[in-house]
Image 1 (spheres, helix red, strand yellow):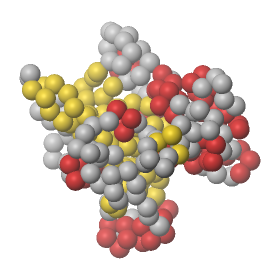
Image 2 (cartoon, helix red, strand yellow):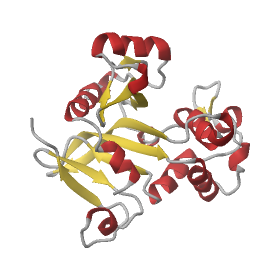
Image 3 (tube, one colour):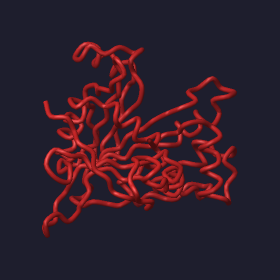
Amino acid sequence: MSDWLNEWKKFDESAIEEIKSHNDDTHLEREWMSYVYERDGRYYIGRASKGDESKIEIIPAEKTAVDTMTKGFTKDERKWTIHGHPLKDGKIYNGRQYFSSTDLIDEYIEVRDSGKNGGRSRIVQYVVYPHEQKENGKTVIHNRVRILVFPDSETIVRAMKKSNPHADPYAITKDSGQNKVGSDGNTQMNDLKIDWFKFQEVLGETGHMGIVDIEGAVGNSMRSESYGTPAWKQYGVGFAVVGLVIYFMRKKR
C-alpha cells in the first residue's frame, strides 16, 4: 500500500466528517487550518482556525492550548497539519488544488536538512479543496484531500532533481524558493524557478502523494487516485494504470 494511503487510512471517521464539514463552507472563501493529532494509532483533528481566501496565521502554542481545552489533545499527540483551500473569487483554480510554495518551503528545508539540524526527518501534509466534476450528467463540486508525504531527505532531494533539474536541491532557501506576491497582487515565480507542482507530481510517482474524494462516488464510499504505482502492487487487482481511480468503503457508524 502506498505511503500516502497508509497515512490517510489512520484518520478516524469522526475526523473525516469534521474535515468535510469545514470544507463545505468553501463558498465563504476562507482558508481553514487544524492540527492533526494521533491517539491510539488513529488521527483526529483539533479546532479549525479561519483566515481569508489565501492566508491564515496562527500562534502554535496558543492553538495547541485551545485544542487541549476544547478537545483534550496534548502537544505530545500533535503530528501534522491539515488546511483547506477555498474558492477564490467564486472560482476553482487548478493551482489551489496543490500545495503552494508557502505550504511546502519550510517543511522541505526541515526534512532535507534533518540529518544536521535535528529537525523532523518525515513530514506529512494534507490540503482539502473543492473539485468540479461530472456525475450522472450533472456538474457537481466534491471535497477532495491531497495527501503529501516527505518520507526522508534522500527521497525529496531526488524528487527535486527530477522535477526541477535546473536547480540545486541543497541551494533552496525560504527566500529563493518561495513564490512572491507582486505589487499588482499576482503571484510571481520564485527566484530559483522551482516548479513546486511538478515536485509534488514526482513524489506521487513513487507513492508519496495521492488524492481522496471524501464525498464518495456512490453511497458511502470514498474514491482515491494513485500516482505512478501499478494498482495491482497496491491493491491486488489486475490493472496497472497511472492515476487509476479506486474505491474503498467507509465504515458506517
